[in-house]
Length: 256
Picture 1 (cartoon, rainbow, N blue to C red):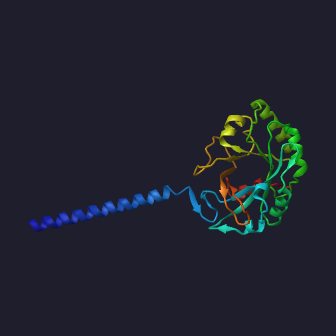
Picture 2 (picture 1 turned 90 degrees about the vertical axis):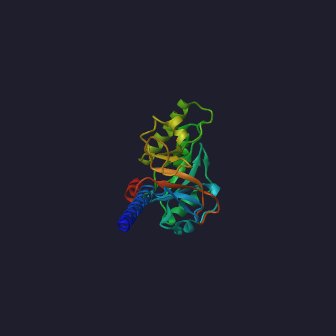
């Protein structure tokens, strides 16, 4: 009798271990499936890159100095490559970025979808700033829509800021026949622009978050890091993702 009891005990103990092992395995699988990392470290790019987006890009200005756009184009690490490039064109009412024309030509030459942005001076006329941008930037088929970079209020009132931003947008939209994209950071948008420009595409800067920018409204581009590295650029560079697939991206490009 004692031996039979021992066998039953041993069998029950083995069964319990198997059940516990199965449960542990199931828990590990579920956690692995539902808790995929939002970012993966890419040493070659020098930063963590969000994994839930398929189209990645950079934005540059004269601060990146001379850029070898062929090297930029050819860099690809584990299916991550540079799929678009924004570049600073103008600032204020008369300034033109010293590297814009070269960057603009070279990006096109090497087949990188390109976009141009204007750095907004809140203390100056929006119409005059729009004229500076239009005089400098000739958008072509396959280019990204024009971008207004607005991130400083410079002591002006919110009402004046919004009026001047609105003036720039209206002039540029009429000229290029496409809605401009607004670039800014989360706090600036919510404090100074929210409610007045919600119908315009948003390119939002928000660092140190892992899956998406913390903003209530929709967005199409997210600048997630400012210290990336790319072949062909001997300086830190901003990294961005597009919020959509290749079909969505192609719809955004200018058709005429």
